[in-house]
Length: 264
Image (cartoon, rainbow, N blue to C red):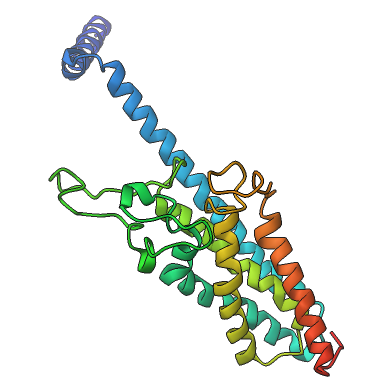
């Protein structure tokens, strides 16, 4: 009985080994990948990693507005105005996102890829290359994808990420910068007046300044169109902090001059 069990176990082990060899034979028969194929796969993985990290950064910057700024400014005002201040920050998230997608991104970065898109670069303001997200979304144009049917992903200029991701990341700063100014007129401005002011401010102040510094304009460091070598913008020090700080100061002075309540 023991001998029979031992023989059966040997046959079972042999059968398992045979099936393993048969299953692995297609993989063994395949040719080894070439260096070009390995490099292409590695490049795709690297681009996916860059894109994933930038999307993570987008979420982190958005959290600075809500709940970050919303809760911070909510703690600086009287109890009856806490919800009002929080609503301002949350509303600006949606409003400024729509403006950025419609024309803000184009005013700030339009013309950065002018040679490829056949447009003209203006060092003072962006052009209409990206209005309504034109040339930002994936394209199914047969002339661009060589008739393969696969969508073409426009890439950001000099960056290993899609242009859509670049637009999203820059849009987070377009959201938080006007929200920073809200603290200057907390409890002292009507909601409708706040909306009108920040829409005009984002269009007439932020977008041109962003184009000057980050879009290759007259303040771009080392840019071809920069004046006196451009400005060193450390993490948005010019586009975000100087612009919002100076604007908030001017707003406070004007409101005090017009006799607005001064309590905050």
